Image (cartoon, rainbow, N blue to C red; front, side):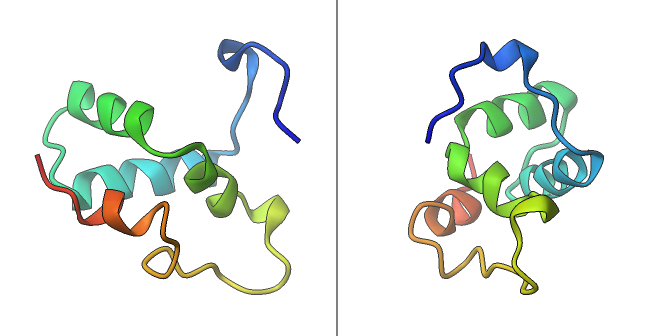
Length: 76
């Protein structure tokens, strides 16, 4: 079910923010602006998959995720 709130009001766990930042840097982002743009362009399912509150005892494989895999391999 999609979150009906304005995205500016959604608070993410610190671990999700750090994981998304790490993904952006690994994908080639070299500035805060580039990290922000990468995170904005990332599929919403990526943040959901990185959220530990949604994990059911196993770590998701981002490379196996068809939505996240190509985005992680993309280097501008």
